[in-house]
Length: 433
Image (cartoon, rainbow, N blue to C red; front, side, top):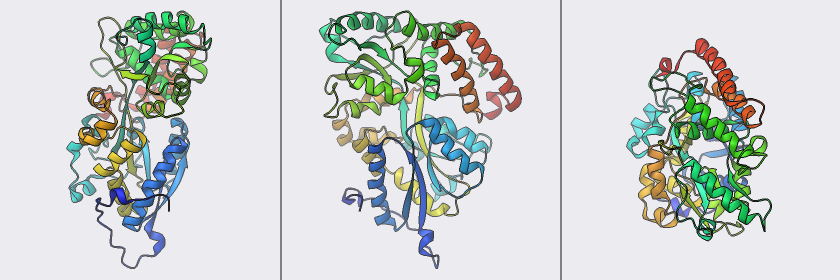
């Protein structure tokens, strides 16, 4: 037994009639990744599901790294393998998976079971088949970039509120960094995701759009070389090389967990990260427990705070031979009771809006009231099936700028030329709307 399940016995499941099917047909494979603590929690949840449904769930453990998780799904799906039956997907993958014909449409299941889609964040339900108009995934949890800050250090050095602009963040960082380094020479003002991977693009979007720029213009056309984007990328580079408030390994090593650990060890004033870091910062072994608060990310003068929309959805493989019982797992995981349990147990931000008003959840996580507004206004990445290729192009050129190998303008010009070739091959954004 992986854990007690008395806390969700109220959840009712409609069991599928198996007829004379063998016992082996009452088992499915679920691909899920994350930190060890997250995987342990999934085991407990799925143990309860097995007891209630009689369906055995075999966990296919995936790594924490998002890009490796994606590749671990692409390989079996591309070859038409029946396993895994069910899996979690980053919101940025769904257009590709759907256009490749790898996802089972969920509309019939949703209609038959009377699932209320209004309970989910509207932005997350844009995850549909881009040409067929079919629902192919449901949100499990939602993400958006946030600013974590050391409330105690701001107060100690005379700052009454977190920074609202990026210039204020630099000002605060330089001052506090200078003071704290007298006792901690490893201290930096601001840590963020600058390594060459998808997280870098999420950060770039937040800097660029908060400066009035972005990957797409108002007409939905790719537009990387506008001055707002160039200025944002220059600022990102300057955080490392000019202002020196971000560590020199920002562009080589800093991903989500490296950033979280650095901040959690007490070595930074500000941290850009996803909401998952909140619960970890409050654990007993954390050097910043009880000293951290969150705020919207800063913006440039005349701009507005922007948070890149992130999150993970659950879907069923088109190649699964056990789609009906796979749907039972999807319904279970996206139910109110389990979404609440994921929030309380892991500090995850549910894909269901209705959980944010739960009194027990709000009491445990008062900051959830702030997150609702952030998520409703989060900025999505382009919804195109070749987004991963687009991202890889941008990652390479943006990271090269952070490394000092290229100036911002020629880097974005080179990236734009490659992006235009992708558009010529696969079609523009409007083709997939």
